[in-house]
Length: 425
Image (cartoon, rainbow, N blue to C red; front, side, top):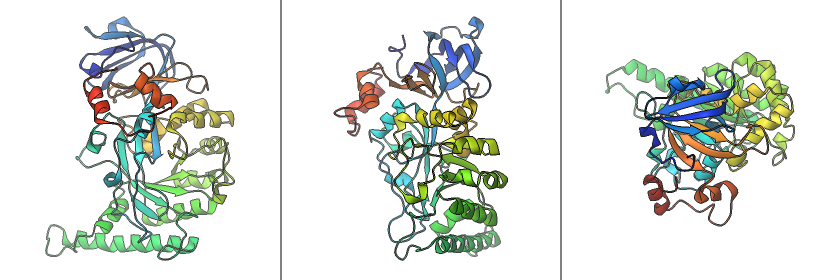
């Protein structure tokens, strides 16, 4: 039954019976029932026959584990790029204009249980551009994957960075102090631009000439967008907090290799952290003090903490490993599982849609062969808005999960057409 459910199964209610449910919102349910319809969760709780709608397709999921689809706050799938080498600050650059939606990495991420990701340009600039929040739906064009806000605008944030990456020859800054100075300078200009807009109100004759860079920065000043900030060293972290306080910015700290050194300061600032946890640290000097206990230390300090892949720095198919390592070093099981799901959703302001199994939320979930923190467990299926997008029993999907010839080839039209027709599901 699990192998035969079709792509358009959301047209008929689906009831998964007997699985061990990890809803994230609330306690785990050993013998649970998950019912989804029209892309939404309509019931999650103990297995009760009366909760199964008439005409529903019932799936025996006994012995399996079901939990929300994983949320990755920091990914570079699709060959993303942002600002060029002409300037260190590029708020007008949109990552959505540089994504290969047919890249095989998206299917590999599905194989790892990821359903929602933040696509970001690199960290070689102080501000490299606007990020994009996407669902890993099967799609022919990027618009098929995009997440939209209630007002119809595209959901996403802004990528910033400090530390070693952005320190290069002019026009890039050569020092940490100059890096901070350039950022402050641009936000001061944006404040002046905002005042001119407010003074003009609805009179276009009085408004300043349209400036795409300033428009993007004003969104940050108005806290309409979240800043996703690459930072490693403890002093760089404090610099981010200092600038965020000065301009009242909504910031998420990313990587935080030395976040454990300033956990109390991060907590006091009310800022959240998305961390990368490597079992073999290395690559750059400023990350040499990466501590596998960072998750536990941040959790104890009261910091909202999530994990991210930074794919291809780490593989999306191995996302669970970060949570498992963090638990081994003292983070709670609850905190680690939240770090893979709802914590990241909150950082992307998507917690009302994804990140937990709750009635009314999107039917994004994964079916596992065992406990999510066990190295022996496999993602067997990934469902997105009631649609199965990955099935380990399908040879095509197995290739993405395990690798081999063709696993890194871009999707072809034949592949997408097969999906649209529901073949191989």
